[in-house]
Image (cartoon, rainbow, N blue to C red; front, side):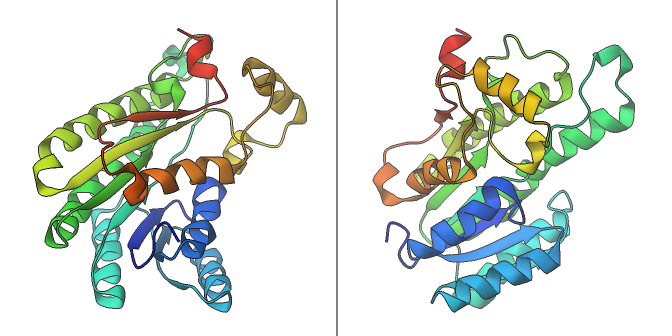
Length: 251
């Protein structure tokens, strides 16, 4: 029960890492508020958590919309009485290829989804955390944003995730005095819909990792669970690599 009686927002909660985090956090005692565009999936997840004795609510919408980011906080406060943490996990890879062939729309969409939505979530969540006397924010970054050797065609994604780490470290310094910790998990290749469904590509990416496999979404969610818990009370501004050794390989 590492999150007992804590209220946690999870974005990108309808698939992948976010979908794994929702029941995991609930099993550890959290009241979870789920955000994603696919409301039907969120409704089903909330029902499953409730059937297991947990507590959950949801807001359907794009977290790149400031009104949705604020609505998630309002849902946490009105339903559960406050906010203790946020797992800001929504993201996308986007089309891969040389920057000379990248459209303005692709660049803007990736930056909006991966970086601007993180800013909007932090802006909405921090006042509620401060009102509670502190809390924890965790963002989903990527090893690609800090050690991108050997991963071509990912300029927009890499830029968004590098920018995210700058945001995380700035927030960690700015809000430490208010009891707010801010950290990031940096996944390696993970078996999610974002990774596609080509088994040959999965095998290629798995072999790039020193551990020679991809992560499960639950393995990444477990790392976020630690950072959100009181066990990480002296951890802030940290990029926690959960990448099967990829960042070490690229040093």
